[in-house]
Amino acid sequence: MFRDRSPNARRRSRSLLFLLLMGLLLYGVAHQFSRPNATTAQGAETTYLPIVMRNFDLVYPFDWPNLEVEQLFQYGLGRPTQVTHAGDGSGRLFITEQPGRIRIVEGGQLLTRPFLDIRAIVEDGDYEQGLLSIVFPKNFAANRHFYVSYTDTDNNVRVVRYRVTPHDPNLADPNSAELILLVEQPSASHNGGQLQFGPEDGYLYVSLGDGENPSDPNEYAQDLSVLLGKILRIDVETEIFEGYMVPLDNPFVGTAGARPEIWSYGWRNPWRFSFDRQTLDMYVGDVGQNSWEELNWQPGDSTGGENYGWDCFEGYYWYEPAGCSPNPSDYIFPLKTYPHPYGCSVTGGYVYRGAEFPRMNGLYFYGDFCSGIVTMLVKTDAGYIYTQPSPWVVPNITSFGEDEAGELYFVARSGGLYRLVDGGP
Image (cartoon, rainbow, N blue to C red; front, side):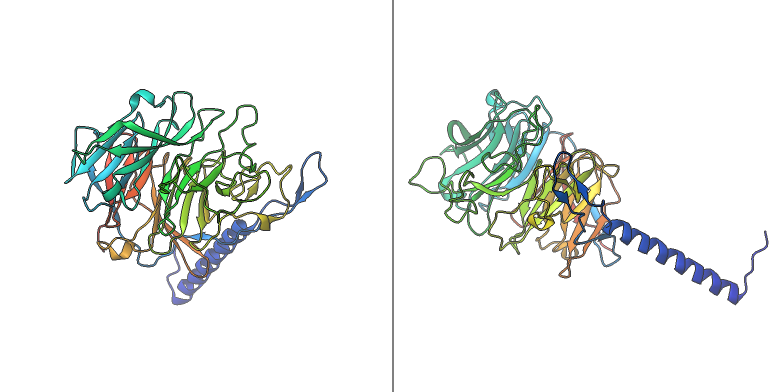
């Protein structure tokens, strides 16, 4: 075939290519900003307005880290659900196993003896049940107690305090259990289960899914009289009370008909959330229903009370609008969404604040259980969201975590422990 190689032809080709690329970009932005036309809920007179995204998402070619994964070990853990540290200067990692054990990694080695074994009282028959989380208070080195979240044999979620034995820092006492919180579940699904201490206020934050009630799977997340579909904020470190206290500055204290423990609501299944060590911002991965996975964000100076939309919305789209406020300003929309062909179950992660890999600093890392892709996300001051996926896949990522220095790890259901690193230029 004859090809015109003259300078004018090359210029025309470049012009056509430029116009094509600009057309694709404008189409993508218009598509990203477009939302369904206004709809009216069946049997109601309320008009539900179309939604406009606050941000759009691009892969932006600035100096991204060369994200690599360092495999500490591929097998050895029994369906791990979380990895974290104790903040006691020991350098240990603590990993929860879904069946009901907590394991320790010390000096790079997985210890054979569990830190805690409560398999006899944990129900783990479903993907979302089992021992879900462990967290250590700031003064753990002195008071030697910690908190776990798990589903019991009646399918209910329990938050329980345990104590370390006086003679061995690598062994907890299974008979020291003190019940902090019990939340009844209508089904085995959507338990949430993450525990985190607020980095500044010292209160315990607890994520709870909507329970997926079989008779009405979405009734609880917008109901302030129940704890399901919420993130709670409670004071568990006050010595003079058993159980917990409700902080007086919680957003629904004094609100008639509302549970005062609630910090935010409108969640489907906030499986994993974290705080940025530097900004105190909260990042939440909320598992979607049929179409969209969500990454949500709460600023560090928030006073709580935000409504994150479920089940009125899934992502940026109306889901079950009947009975919901038609005003979009009443909701907080996701920082980022991605569709189910790209994944099916988001695993929220952490903002990197370690010292070893400077190019990773300030980036938020999250994954997807189904696709196995880890994605880097950065939020600019202008509100734009830029992402870059990993070039590799680790199937069934269940949780991310930090060590004391702020280096990032993740665990996979198959039993592996991995570290995120910058492989250099």
